[in-house]
Image (cartoon, rainbow, N blue to C red; front, side, top):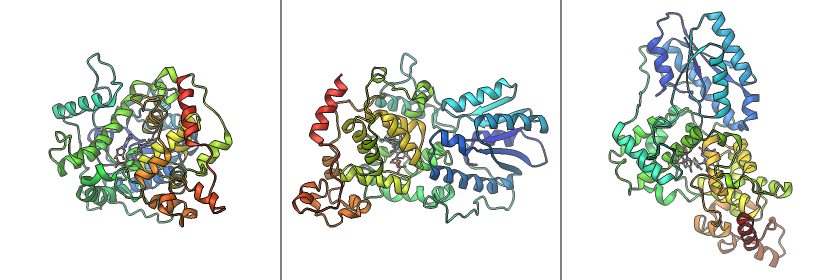
Amino acid sequence: MLLWFRNDLRSHDNPALQYFLKNNTCNTPLKAVFFISEPQWLLHDWSTIKIDFIKRHAAALVEELAPFNIKLDLVNVDSFGDQIAYLRALCEQEGFQEIVANSEVEFNEQQRDNAIVNLGIKLTLFEADVIVPKGKVLNLSHQMYKVFTPFKRAWLTYVKQHGFDYLGKLQSTSQASLSPTVQSPDSISAHWPLVHEVEKHVLPLFFAEKISDYHDQRDIPSIKGTSGLSPYLAAGVISPRYVLMSLINAYPDILIASDSEEFSWLNEIIWREFYRNLMFHEQRLCKHQCFNEKYQAVAWHYNDALFDAWCQGKTGYPLVDAAMRQLNQTGWMHNRLRMVVASFLTKHLLIDWRLGEKYFMSRLIDGDLASNNGGWQWAASTGCDAQPYFRIFNPIRQSERFDPKGYFIRKYLPELASVPDKNIHFPHTLIEKNKLNIYWPPVVDHKEARLKALAFYKV
Ligand SMILES: Cc1cc2nc3c(=O)[nH]c(=O)nc-3n(C[C@H](O)[C@H](O)[C@H](O)COP(=O)(O)OP(=O)(O)OC[C@H]3O[C@@H](n4cnc5c(N)ncnc54)[C@H](O)[C@@H]3O)c2cc1C
């Protein structure tokens, strides 16, 4: 039997790994494989920081699995086609009768798996990317919910009734440490520690010190008020079931305390489940289609100069520009700002949301097809349970509300360091008055752009 790691590079709560260990009687080192397929990943627009983060975790897992008599090979191949050819040859050479892995929800990945099965290879799949198995939370007509809140209620009912299958950590019989020693201080993702550190320190600290203020602080980009778990969940190196188990251990009433501060955080974890379920039910979301088909015919604008200004943080709207520079410099962007910049691109600039989705994917360390697509379609009003099209974020008002003193703006736009707080959200009047040449003029006028967007969407 061969174990195949994909978007689940972890030993903790990994159903395929546990099945593999239980059903393998061989004494020689057990064999596992992980494909490093950079050209394929780049075709999927993965960012270099995400790729680096995954490679670090793959190297750490090699060490971590050794005490379990598992030899994990990291194999460089270009494409999914090459992965199939490699597996076929390996099964023939080594006589493997079965490959075991955890399923992936995305279309291309499923096509690849189907091709393997069509070769006559037994592929046993488990589910490791969600808390409640996908397809279990359905409405009374046995359809996927189209709105988040009823999905959330049904999801909670399901968890209360059925619990969830948390498998726990692997127990090593050897003396070897389960925490890998791999160090990579120079890597571009080094700011993000390996997942063991997150499980041991970051998550417990978040539960002890931050989660109670999450509801109030989660929208303030100058504060580190959120968990920072997204790169780990997106790469599958942490288990969502472990995350919920830890939350329940810290707050035993969480599933019924829907008014609590802590529940606001669980709410976000359920958004993630919602988007993964949507993708599971609607594979066309993997193919660049609008969830709401009536928006499929929208005549988006394709203006390279405006798109470049947005990408580079040169729109003349400080909160939008600071957010885009945060993304470009760090590979991560605060959730409130993701909503603001996505709204700006689609509603102020009327540019196709798919260009924004692609750009995010190519920069984010936590790029995840389901959540990214869901977030973009929400902001562009083309999605499931999306923001109605007539709700258009005012980037100046958002800035006044969520960065009132301009701390975040000044961090990423040092050229505005000396601008007083009252002008920081839209410094142009001051700049013109004093004939300063420190910042970009606004690429569009907010009021005009808003009226144009309303007319545009109505058509
Ligand atoms: C336009 C847009 C694009 C996005 N692209 C991605 C993406 O590619 N990958 C990604 O993981 N998230 C994406 N999000 C969701 C969200 O912005 C990030 O998950 C969040 O900022 C991560 O920070 P955190 O881990 O500190 O989150 P926390 O606030 O601590 O939340 C905990 C976890 O809940 C999940 N979560 C939180 N908010 C959302 C949400 N709105 N939708 C789905 N899951 C959520 C994440 O897994 C997150 O790690 C996007 C949102 C928008 C509006």
